[in-house]
Image (cartoon, rainbow, N blue to C red; front, top):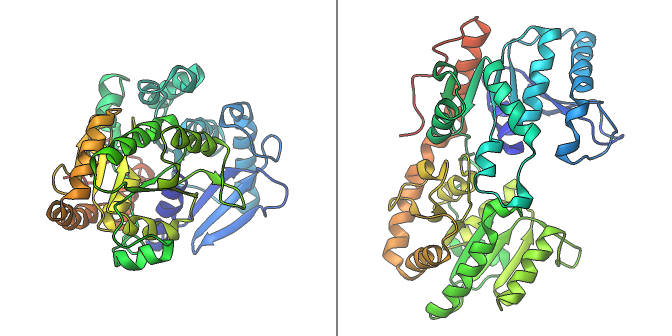
Length: 397
């Protein structure tokens, strides 16, 4: 979501639409306003203690956040034509800001409590308050942006949203950053043998990402392939010695239990401009998520010309073209994931076809097209329209 907000703002500003991004202050040293790109300001708003808080503790500070946003705009003499909120907390802040700004707002959930809880374990379920307020936002927002057609259908049929206020616009990918590079160059940068079968996983350490399923599939692959493949695990935290810490330590412990520790390279979180090296070093990228509203990792990998094996869920059903840019498997199915990873790793011709198809499939998700579609929604809302908000050009085929 952070990548989405930053990249959307940057591309909107390139079309002469200035953007202010409001965020809750989480320290005492960051300046109030930072220009993160020409025409894009990041504004830290005091609301609650100036420290990092768990997301579930932020809700009580939203009225203060909205009031401080309004005070900032008064001090700066700024009037906003449209507010774009992301995730349920900022959606409620956008609603509260109406008393000050009387400005239309468009909301994007990214994920909903309903969709997440449908696949989450008992200990990972979202709190009831989130679901309650999300249902409220469906009626309060002037427009809703769904990341994929399934999300749009769920908002309409299960959550009773008005169809004419929902536009389906996926997130984008930076095609100037995510592009192919010679595999031998990428592997040399990571110290990986040029001929070693290699899988990449990129994502946060979260049960919804299907990490346990991937490790169990990797264990099966070690039994059926001539050589044990390597897994590049990008995400989570590592210490100064490169040892996994925090939630990533439990992933490493599972790798130990499965006798895979020597086959997994735990790289920790990486800056965005470093990710193409990992994508291009891999023969295939695994996205075994239980749910994805879009599947940004899959599209980034495709833009680098790397085939994808992903779960047939959420936005992945629409971003990954079966047999063209990758292969789709049932979520949580260890055997199917292992079998399809083995297909790609062992069949050079298949891998070449999927690589070529991946490059073509990623092109429609360029940020320029996404920003244009979002800009159209803003323009309609700013002009006073509350229907026929969507751009005529569909990004999804």
